[in-house]
Length: 523
Image 1 (cartoon, rainbow, N blue to C red):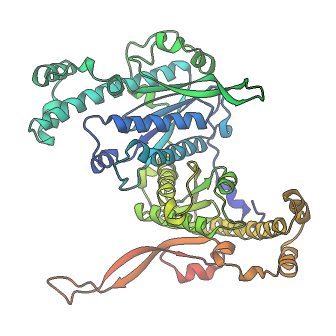
Image 2 (cartoon, rainbow, N blue to C red; image 1 turned 90 degrees about the vertical axis):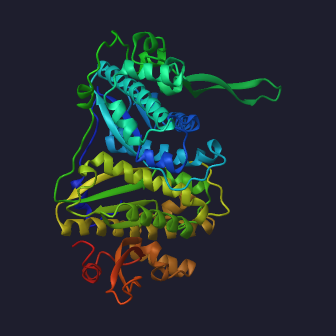
Image 3 (cartoon, one colour; image 1 turned 180 degrees about the horizontal axis):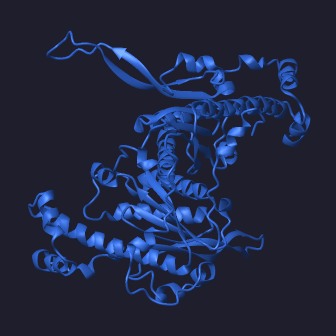
């Protein structure tokens, strides 16, 4: 990070570490998935291919994040349980849920065509995520029992509902009919009216899917004499069990007992309110500017694998900008965003009540939507480059109490943009001229801005101030007003209406003049 007079804004960041011995659960849920499933023609009440896709995403997530030792999912949700000794990103809740939901979303899209080869992905799916802090192994057991019971009850209701709709009832009639029926009556309804024995339905529908990892020997290469070289690697396995919270299931898997603890009793009665009390619900301070900053995870490697141009890849930056604009169009409470390299900061209006100002909801949805758009838009900006693996982003929410402090935050990010870009421009020119990366780092160590500017000019004939503004100043996106005359059928002479759109500019947002020229942004 750059050193500047704006550094003080970091003091507003709040620590959200999940302290040991709490067990960490990250639950990912689809956002508005009834509409998503309807638009994409999912089979009702259960689409086996859609569930297979969710399982693929969960398996990839577990293989990506080795601290996740168990997961359970059904319908459009998945819960990921981290080992009790996990120090993954130092147990910061926002890091945990944002990275998991981002990667899960990216995999969902990259795997879509494989699972649905004849279905076009019409619009980007997104997920929300939250952390559940289980104070003990008993709380984790209660949580898992609650989710599996919910799976069963929900599936029984949906099976009855869609059978009633198939036989002629309206949605409202089917809903009203089931509202007054008990569990036993629903079983009888399915058996007597539709000749369905609920117990014979596929386990994946009734019980959900759980995934755990084991270590298996895998041949990685062969010696010259032909003998195999084996290594232990993690492998995720899908299992369907009627009672994942039971002692018998849990304790027969040594990895679960070792990494999480043993279940000592079975659960007789589930109290959902008790379990919900362990869900982290961090409501952000009212009447403050909320900034959601997202950062690419391991994007140095991502840019190398995908051969991004150094020090700046215009296509990659424009892809980031396009994603930011689409996020703002989806969430009109976002009034401004600023991006550079692999990061973007989104500003919510001061009085926004979006998602009840719950940090996990806001951060996870923005991160998930951004990840979704990044993958879907990739071929638009890189038509001749294959996306080698799913990208991921992490995010955090910070509240700023005044407009002045918010502007200082944005100034901090732009100062950082300038300093990093100037350094990177020098670094990559030195590398291109024949120096090694370590030699280039040593050469630049301790140099000041004027020295770097002079070096670029004298050694490489580059005038730094003539480089593209997007590289030097980053990108700012905000809602602009555009007045157009609307030709109305009945009243052609009707008064003008205002259409709003998001614009991207490359401007100096440190100077007051920018905000004076665009007073509506933060008003």
